[in-house]
Length: 81
Image 1: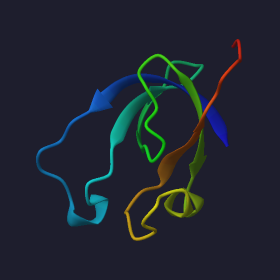
Image 2: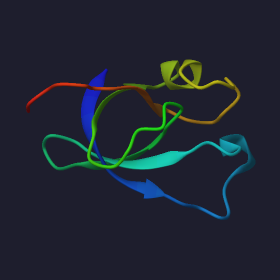
Image 3: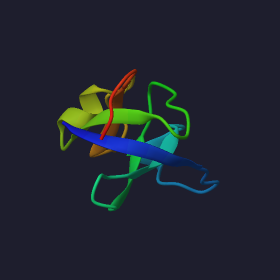
């Protein structure tokens, strides 16, 4: 698991069928790297979240058939980088 900052929502009108209607978020890591993750928890912009990657990312989604390798698992209530 990793900790990321939610930078923005990502809206895509055309997407691969495997993504279904999953919400997407743009995340920034503590070293500045940018990634896109599926978001089953509804994390708002500006919040710190923890994620899971690889095949475990599908297990975090309500529908395990969603094609993802990075999913937000939870919103962090209190944490300072």
